[in-house]
Image 1 (tube, rainbow, N blue to C red):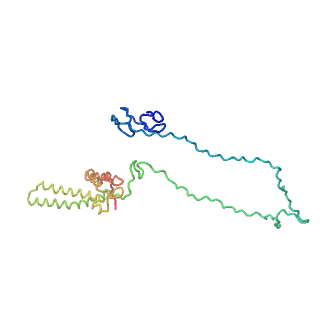
Image 2 (image 1 turned 60 degrees about the vertical axis):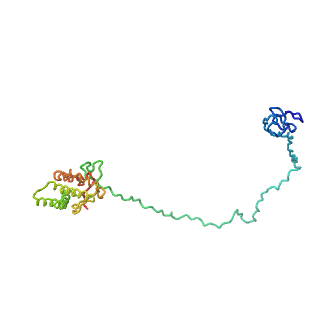
Image 3 (image 1 turned 120 degrees about the vertical axis):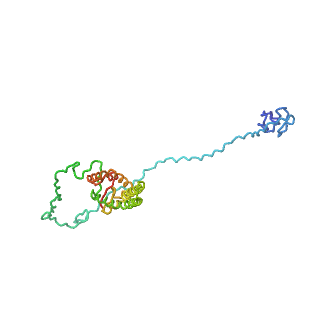
Length: 304
């Protein structure tokens, strides 16, 4: 589009001339008719006109560089002027000797000291103290030992490999156990006599002994005997052992408890063979006086 003022060519969407800034007439791109500025639709054909382009900025003024600061005049240093004459030297150093001593006076280089006493050598050297003679401490001679003791199973106190030394207790053997068992038997005979006697007396009245009525009291007597040994030995011993001053302990000297007491009494089946002869032999041959039930349960019958 040509500017009507300066004749410069501009883009169709320009509103102002890019050279002189004069407003440009708008032309409809469809019908070619000129329309007034600011109209959005052509009044002849109804074509929507292009959006107004932003006004072109005026030609920028030439940029003037800022004034450069004027450099201060550089004053050259004053020229070197050699001295007209060398400086006068200072007074020369002269060593002044001390004044001579007056006539007839002895010359002394320092303070005068009084006369020292004449040296008198010692008449005899000082006595030298002789240290006492060294006496070694008394060392007693080693005791005379006999022949080495025999080693092996025949030696006293020999323990087979893998076994621990038995605890130090007053172990009770066959005869103390035998008398304790007699006392326990007397104590257990009391409920046995009462139950079985009542059953037999009832049968004597009727004149007929029913075997089925004997099994019940016999079973009850057996239960009482088993419970007597298990419960009392778990707490340290039966009444017969306590009367004779004996008790049952574990390796630490404590009460064995129900577990060890149960194991100990279950093995009475083996120890009681042939009228407790098997148990008596095992107790007599054991250094800790233990029967088979004691060895398995880890218990000991000792004195109080």
